Image 1 (tube, rainbow, N blue to C red):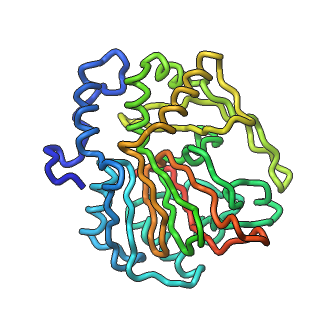
Image 2: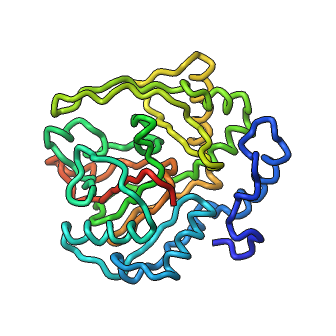
Length: 305
């Protein structure tokens, strides 16, 4: 946390910063944003004594960090090692921040908690989150409809992998800055309401997930929201120019070093965030059975921190 920040992490004073015509507001916001956002390796792991009952001071510290970088890393000291119980504790933790569960996910268990682990279950087989494979840059729920927009989520470690399974994070606002500095025209293309299309997809239960059409960047109540995936299959872009803008964004994410945060979550540790850009490395490559002990819990929400 940057204690020397004059505005305490509050960037709301910079109205119009996301207006491509308002270069003065953008310059002021950009300067403040790059000052308060922790650089690579400098994001603290904030202590939470009891996962199910965060104190007011613990919540304040987490919210301050989220205000500065759109994510906060926490380490709980007291939490259950029982998978069912820790799921309930995690929901109590997020309830304390006023987060509202977003969706009836096909893999959600009690309290909307999804266990991210290697699985061959019919409704999970073939989906990368339930494999040992690497995951490319994305925001959660990029395939959802506008009414099911994911604005925040928590990722909590129950068991870590023996090898690999690192998470990388880039604040969406940092990605916006990199792209706008490189090409305001690319930003405009990716803010088009029909910039990115994810086609409909059949589900294991026989239902069909409908087509999802929308922008990559959009503004909501003065906040920057992002809907993005670096996938190259089952996706289409509005035009060749839009596809080139997306490729430029991908290149900028791959080359980011100053504000790239890399961590291997340990048991009791998690990331509470406003649906920031993230990826995951492959893990446990020597697991000859295809299984792994690694398990993280995830809950997604439709409101921001």
